[in-house]
Image (cartoon, rainbow over all chains, first blue to last red; front, side):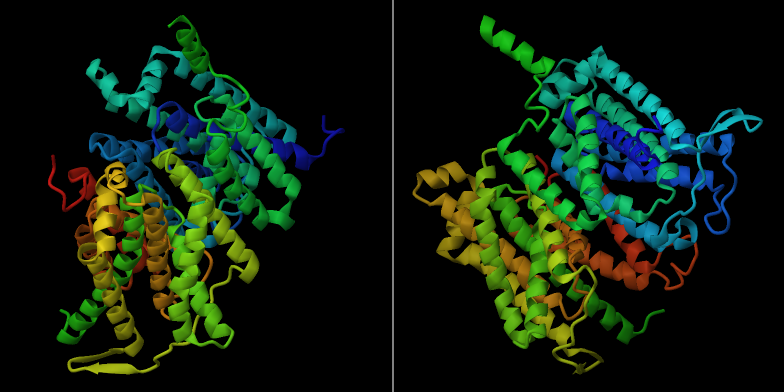
Length: 318
Length: 300
């Protein structure tokens, strides 16, 4: 494999999959459950920072420590706990306060933007605009005496592939379970689900926390791959581009957003650094054009979902 | 304890913040309240206004001409965008307009960055002296900007409550279908409203341009605050928007001057300005928990 394609291409593949996982997490919250989390990138960014902190043993200035199994596991744990806790707090206020969906989205977006400012401001702890640099590689195993440092891009790629695959299977299983059916029903008509006696707020809160945690894990994988994490993870472009991925893929299809992110990441890489500014214009134009002409998303328009099939069946019989 | 001078200065700063925030939020509210369009690109129209003023200074037309040209040029841009894009979104729903205007916001910011570069630029002060206000002195341009801002806010409120346009506009806010049945050309109302909303943002941008750094990303900072004000003020409630502007702008400005300056010098707290914004965000979130329909709307 390494003979055919270079390190750069393998790293790009890992990166695309990580962003695919991030898009998947937003799809669980927004596409499936209908929670408009406009600042979902906050959870991804927090996951990345937590992993960065842990791998650097919380000393962001000075030489980086050796890769260690304990640091990796601590980073993963923090990348699940911290975004989860934040989502729990915001979700609790938003859902139990019965804040309108769009207002909720705007509050989450404002939170992401304020996190960016706080991280830049608290440079003593976070490294400011320079972020956390020289993040060591991850190491897996049962202890530092029996560990495998994911040094080569191929090793890291397989680890990412495995995690993304498991996450995808997990979310698909979740969505197809009775729990997931309730989530879809909440998206379609929350009031009606409530009259059936379901505690919709609890369902939404659980879905939102799981979604934030998946985003956090994706962020945690991003940190060692990218070697540095900066506050730009929390800016408006980062927040918007995950929505573009989900919309391009077709919201509520799970595999669509994952593919959407991978495809767009490759297009971005193909355009290269020279066209970084133009790429953002393309992202913006894509968002407008798809909303106007393909409301079901680019890939979503091509594949019919189970939901549509059932609808068609009902129509034919009725 | 703070002295009388500091108290007056604090009051003037808070008044300025209130006026500018309200001016931007009013434009957003007019579009949001009337057209049910969540205009994520509103901050970009504010930025464009500041850029028109900057361009006028740079190309020799002078700041004052820029101040007048900015709302005109930007509302023409705004109305063109309404005709090209926004018009097609009314039927698709709130969420789609939010996402499409978000795309618009990204595109406008990047186009301006490509054309002029992303670096911040500072404009010369058009009134470089301090006014003697009996108890204390205050920069003359700030006083001018506050007065002009108040004048624009008052005329907007009057426009909505004292003119025929206002009656038709408020009718469209309350029930667009009914208004259209009664012979109001709602699509023309929408066009004019969008022009008015973007023009207000541009006026705020041009007015503030000598006081802040002019850069393509400057709109983002004001977007979140304007949305807070609109949400707290209640949908389609113009006096409520002004009052919410006082709550958000006033508390942010007061907190910024009251928090100790030592914050943000490498301690565990961020600088007063950022900490104040964070606290205001938390305050707004909690207020929304208590009053989801807006601060000044009776709960059903």
